[in-house]
Length: 300
Image (cartoon, rainbow, N blue to C red; front, top):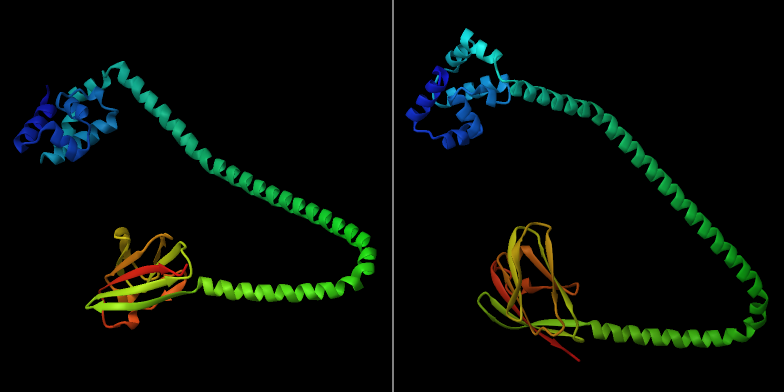
């Protein structure tokens, strides 16, 4: 073992570092650290790494790297460098070949990217043109079919036009009445009511009445940072913090009977049930933290 390896190893031991410690600090693999201490420089990847690793090793253990590198350049060291094994030279050549191949790939990379972009653009243009051609062909066939059907049915329509006018009017009137009745019925069925039944401090109990049992959509929206939690029939479904503009939706099953909200910033939180606003702030708008319990009932 020559002076460079001994000097570095002695300084490492004096510092109290193990080879594993030095590997963690310098990020140099342990096998290379051992090779440096034994001056087996042929085990390192190349001459550049020999000098770089010795310099980093010396700085880590508090030695002057310049002095050690000068020793590395002494006649004795130069002779040893010249007499390195043939396997190291072969390894260096392989590294250079790999580097050349990689550099060649990097030189070709811009060309490959350009060719790929051109292919994508041409493909997109072809797809759009083909799609438009298909749409135009379908449109022409439909129009041709409509003209043929229209011309053949014109004569028969004229004959029956007078006789069906009255029937059509009566049917339209009846249909309008039925649609009006359906709309009124639909409005009645989809109506929902929510009212306050009791209040104690920060806790509020409401009753939600719906036209029929159905899955409802519950949506929370925040106008500022606000923490919230939602429970259905005593089981927590979601809890989290929403920032300004964020929202979260939860589905209320048709057979659910109880819905609970824990609001950390109720002034910055709005709730909608099936798109209809749940205006809980009207019941004491000064509270920030509040608990809302909603008992669900249906009319059918």
